[in-house]
Image 1 (cartoon, helix red, strand yellow):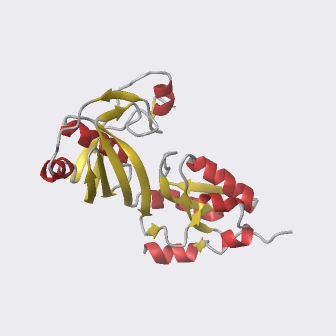
Image 2: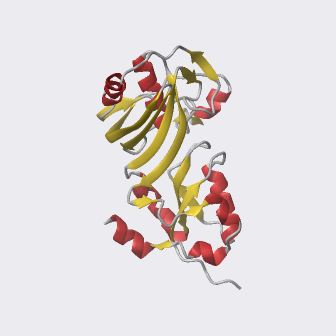
Image 3: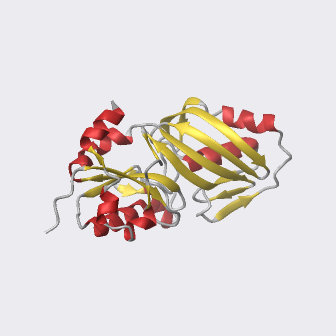
Length: 238
């Protein structure tokens, strides 16, 4: 009989083209336990920090999810999609003007500090008890209430029109694909999020993370070697 698995947190580097629930399912199979949850959903196209909470650590979910996040992303100007990212179907295509760095910085600057963001239809927010993405699949668009969010900082790393690479430091509940969509709208040509990687969630980053696909092969003990115990979590977040 295998010893009981301690409570704690494991940071996973999520691969593209898998859901956060897929990662939980793989971890449950690898560790042979059911009490595993994830903290902070990542869209299928996104990669990076996904925290798995094990046993008693699942009670920390609400506390850990309110922490700020850091994302590296790319947006593509000129094409809007129905999901606001590369997984969606194109809705409109426009010519991309020869924007200057000043033009682009001004568009990003509009979304600095506190502001309100309209949640996309393709999201897990509920409307009358039904998740918006389920309504979106039925071709329905419903009214949503804007939500307060905050961008603490951003950096533009590369401009190679129509593509822009950036990093954004943001609050919980922030939709980076909506950020890209709104910046494109302000520039007048539209945009969608073409790539996304979460590099930090609260105090937890990709150092000592486990690549998601390695969960299937490295074995139970190797996974548990990366476990951050409840005591260590308390020390990190204090």
